[in-house]
Length: 175
Image (cartoon, rainbow, N blue to C red; front, side, top):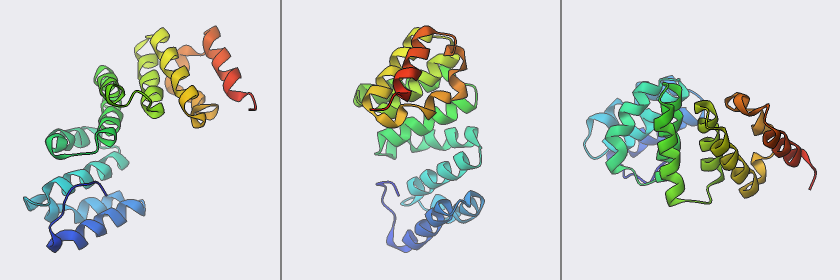
């Protein structure tokens, strides 16, 4: 779970909700989270779990609302920034998604996932040069971003660029 505290009396409920999420049953998780949300000492955990469930259900606006309340209480900034950016992108707030990734990268300049997502969001916004810089950085930082992720539809605006073709070629080359 996150590093948020849960009162002992509600630990079993928190574990149950998280279990439903791990089993791929976000609707059941939503149905079980209410006692956590109603208890002041467990509300932050309830919000965290409800965000996860709403993201899995593609209820991104609801996730953003919970993230706003959760922000001052959550202590995993990478998860927070990635999740907020994910939701922002899906509700059409690309500039906000970019800001989330820039915030993450100020704290963690070596975050490959941060650079990759920033590259995707910038490509969708039409900032091809900065997008290419971020994608290249992600591919250098972590081999898992070489190859398949470059097929992401968010990168369609870059496909005709020579530097994108070169990056794809470099990423596909055996080590």
